[in-house]
Image (cartoon, rainbow, N blue to C red; front, side):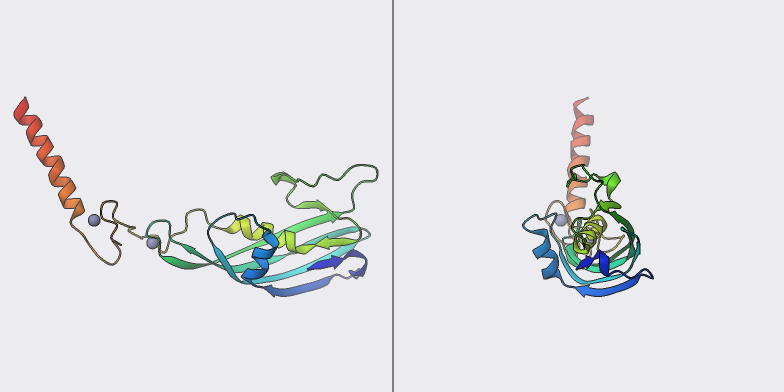
Length: 176
Ligand SMILES: [Zn+2]
Ligand SMILES: [Zn+2]
């Protein structure tokens, strides 16, 4: 979604649209920030203009499909965030820094009367992708010994490990 700055009315305009996972992948252009798929990306925002300065405020929601970091089951998590961006034309005579650091995240320059809203949305979505997704707070994960899903099945590994330790302890005692 590209916005023509000169077409934003003084009273502001509402932008409401949806995107899919394919759009997200295409816009990432080869860079994969992690193992996840997106779906149902919804954007709802307002663009206001004061002379050449543009303020964009709104929210983005999406569904992210990724695997639980403990049991590896595929899960769908809702994500969402609200954002506020200020866009201004670049200061005259200075070269625009294309690499903006985190502190500048909510402030950007636009060039040639066009604001690329897609980059804003992608940035917001990536910030919301959970680092350690869980299918449930209480997920018991996989058994580190036999790999069984301990949410749905049980194994005897723990008991055996405990027995081994006890045996080792007994041996120690005997040796002393
Ligand atoms: Zn899990
Ligand atoms: Zn086990």
